Image (cartoon, rainbow, N blue to C red; front, top):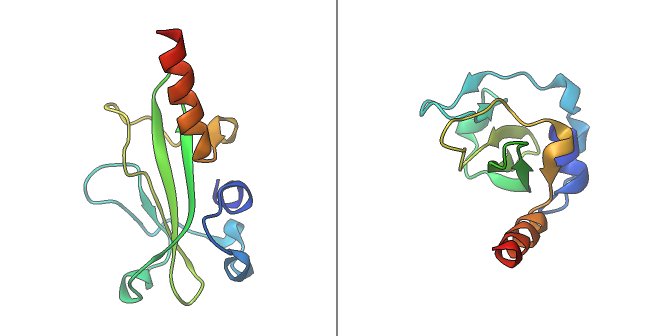
Length: 116
């Protein structure tokens, strides 16, 4: 998922972050609020503020959706995957085929308005 976000939904130049292969990331903590957000870098809290690396939307088969934000540190470490607006019943992390760049949300909302 991290690689997809870097490849398809980058918000900025992410080339310096590719030095840290996504396959080497390890989840070191989950968000304390109970959402599905994940923290990868144990030292990242000491290197604030974060830099937004990527922004995407996940559409679930049951028509729910959620946002995905990938954050990094100023010293080019991937810090966390945030899911800021999970559905009312938080599903597991979405499958890759369900991910879309953020522009897909405006298209989906426009399509929904046309069908009403």
